[in-house]
Length: 538
Image (cartoon, rainbow, N blue to C red):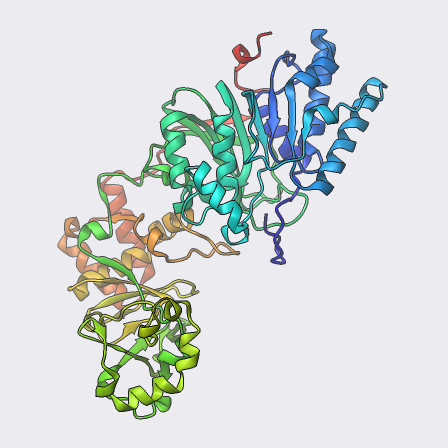
C-alpha cells in the first residue's frame, strides 16, 4: 500500500476487525468443524490473519474434539517473502500455540514459507484463501519480476499492480466451491489493468460480495489504497451479488447494509458502483454518437518545442501553432498564455530544415538536449521529432477541452483556434451546438457521479478526465433528445447554468426509467453468515 506521505511499502498491516470480517466471509468460524479445512494466506506479514486463524481452529477443536496440532500441520499455510516480517510471523505463531496448548512446539517451520508466493509451486488446493495482498505499483516492480509475471500470469498486463497476479494465482489454487476473500485496492474493478482478471472471474468464478470502503481506515497505518473487500467462490456464477459501499472512516462490520445487484458480466462491472444500469438502452457511449476522443500532443521536450510569443526568435510563422494547456483553463476562466507549439512536421513527415533557416538554427542550438531523449536515441536521424506526430488539421476542429487535473466546474469549447497540449483531453465534433450539449451533459451531476465511480479519483475524491473513463461513460443519446431539451442544454451551457442542465438530464432519466436498480437490502451481522456448511463436513 502507499502511505499518505508518498513512501511506498508493500506491507501495511490489516486491523483485527477487517481480519475477523474476512474470515467470516469464507466461513472460517470456530463454531464450525474446521478439522479438515485447508486455508492459505499468501502475504502473511507479522501474523494478523495467522493469529486469528489459529485461535479459531483451536476453539473449533475443543468443540468438535479433533487434534488441534494435527490440523494445524495438515491444513494451515502462511507465505511471507520479507525476511524480517517472516521472523516475526513465525515467532507470533509459535508463541500463540504455546499459550493455547502450553506446549513448546515450533509448528511454524511446518506451515510457514519464506518465499515469493507468485513463483512458488503448490502441490495442493485450498478451501479458503484470505488476506491483504501487497499493493506495489507497476513502476516499482523489478524488471526481472515483470518478465516472469507476464509469462506466468495472463492478468499481469498493461500497468498492473502486484495484487492482480495475487488474485489470479490464488483463484487458481482454490478447490471446487472454495472461497477467496481479499482486501485490496478497488481499482481493478474498473481500470484497464483489471480487465483480464474481471473477465476470468466472470467466466470461471462466482463473485459473491463486494464491500467498497475506500474512505475508511481498515489498516494500521493511514494509506491511500482505496480499499475494498471482495469475496469470490470457485463455483457456477449466480445471478446476483451482494454490494455495499460504506464511507464511514471507521467501519462497523456488524451493521453493514448490503444490497443485491446483478452479478457483473465482462463489460458491466462498473454497474456495481452505480445506482442505475450503465448499459440502459437509453444511454449510449460518447464515441457511438459520432464524437472523437483524443489527447493532446506530447513533445518529449516541452521547453524546446513550446515557447511563449516573446521567445520565438523569428522562427518561421508557418512552423508555429498556438497551443492551449491546462494551465490556461483555471478558476473557470479561459485565458490563453500566448504559447506556441513549434511544429517540425510538414505533410505528415519531418520537414526539411534547409527550407526554414530560423527553425534550423533554433533546433541546432538545442540539438544536444533533443538527442538525449529516448525517441531520438531510437532514431538519431530524426533527432528533432516530437513524441507524437503533429496533425495541423486538429487545430481548426471545434474541440471540447477536458483538463486531466483541474478544479474547474466549467468545460470550455475551442471553436478551432488552438492545438491541445498533452495535459488536455479533447472531444471533437463538426457541430459546436452538439459540443455545447455534450458539455452540459458532462457537467451534470448524473455524469459526475458516474465518473467518480468508474474513473480514477485523486486524493480528496476529485475525478479525473481520462480517455479510458470518457470511453466508458454512458450518456443520453443527443439525437433522441427533443428539440426543446437540446435548445435548453445549449442555453444552459452558454449561461453556465448547471442547475438547468441537471434538471434536463434528471427529467430525461425519469422519462426513460433510469433510476435506482437496487432492489433488496440485506443487513449483514455476526449472526447472518452464509450457509456454506456443505464445504465443512468432516
